[in-house]
Length: 107
Image (tube, one colour):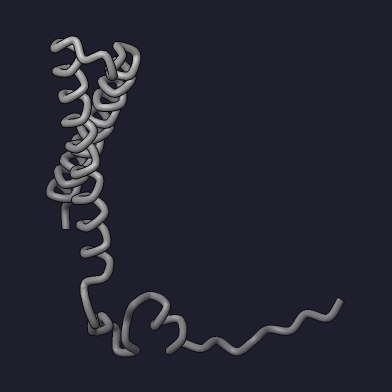
C-alpha cells in the first residue's frame, strides 16, 4: 500500500476555522448565521401563534353550535396548539440554560 501525505496548507485550515492567517477572525460580510436563526425563531413563534389562534376560533365556533365545525377538528387543533406551545417553552428553557451556562464559564 502506497501512503503519501499532502502538504499542510495553513491558510486553508485557518479559513475553514473562520480565521485569517494572523489568527484574527475573518471579516463578516453579513450576519448570516444570526439572521438565519432569528428568522427561523420568529417564523416558528408566528406559526405557534397562528395555530393557537386557529384553535381558539374553532373552539368558539363549536361553542356557537356551528354545524360546519366538529368537536374532533377542534380537539385536534387544540392538541396541535398545545404541542407547539410546549415545544416553544422547551426551546426557551434550553436557550436560557445555555445562556446561563455561558455566563457562568470562567475565562
